[in-house]
Every structure is written in structure tokens, then in C-alpha cells.
Length: 212
Image (cartoon, rainbow, N blue to C red; front, side):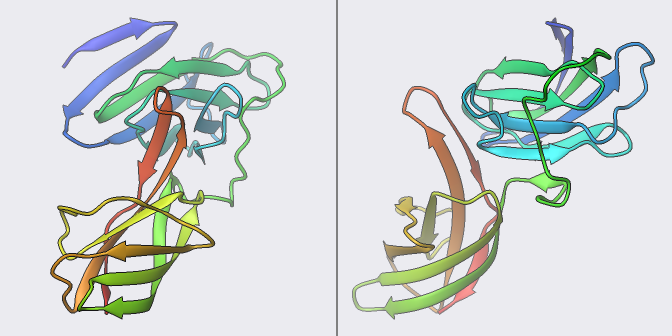
């Protein structure tokens, strides 16, 4: 294992993967070394720190999120502590960050309602309605229901590797797809992508299988 030290941040590289990994953030009091419970941990941009995702630290001072594969800003806030704001590079591996919060006063830059998101923040598909399914043309129109932050795109395919499929923009929860080899069921995945081509962040949901 390799440790990196920078800006008071100790980063532990856990594993390498071809896709986005888990981001576990542990927050401790710089003076006592004790875990800081209830700190808001946000992924976003300088303009909006909580634009993308957010979670609260648990009793062990840990917040669990999905690691963006693009550059982003990691912000941590809690009453009685100075804010922590760190620019993070693009990465595609599991990462555990341990951050020290300095006791003090500061207006929070990152706020997360503890009841707004599950401990593992991001996007989850809670339901899919198939509005149209034409096996001859492969045209599929769906209504997607999600929890967490609102997705911007969804993709649909007859295979769980989504070979040949592309992300389609969601409009009012709906999207239209053309699926090759349309069968009795399709695989569906949602994502949230914000930013521009040079600097953007994204999160993807787990894959669900929906009968036609």
C-alpha cells in the first residue's frame, strides 16, 4: 500500500479498477483524534459544493459515497470546525481519505440534510415504467424513477454491459431508446453528469432489469 501526504490529508489507495470506485471519507478532530460525527461531506464544484452529491459522517466519522471519475471539489463542514475544501483529480479506483478538522468557527460551505439522502449518496433507480416497446423497430420509451440526486441521463440495452447503447437525456423523467435484439426484458442504468467537457463529474446508478 502507498500513502500520500498533502495539505494535511492522508490518502490511502485501496484498489484499482476500470470503473468508478467507492469514496470513503473519515473525518477526525485534529486536536483529539476522535471521529467527527454529523459532518456534511459534499461533492461538487467551487460554485456549488453540494451540486453533485452529499452524505453525513456516521458515529465512526465516516461518510460513504461513489467516487466521481472526473475532477471535482470535496468539501466538509460541521458546526464548531473550520471548513475543509479540497480539489480532487479524476480517478477510477476505491479511495479512503482521512481528514483532520480544525476546531474553530466558519460559515459552512457544505450542507446536507441528514434525512435527504441514504448514507451511500448518489443515484438509485427505484422504478421503471415501460411506456412503449416496439420489438420490430427496437424503440423503447421509459419513465424512470430515482432517489438521491436527480439524474440527467439514462441508458437502456438488452445486455448488462450496454454494448452498442448510448446515454439519452431525461426529459420530465422520460427517455426514448433504440435497443438492439430487443427481448423480454431490458437493462436500465441512470447517471448524473454536470459540468463541461473539460471539467465535469458524474455518478451512475446500479443496473436494474425491467420486464417488457
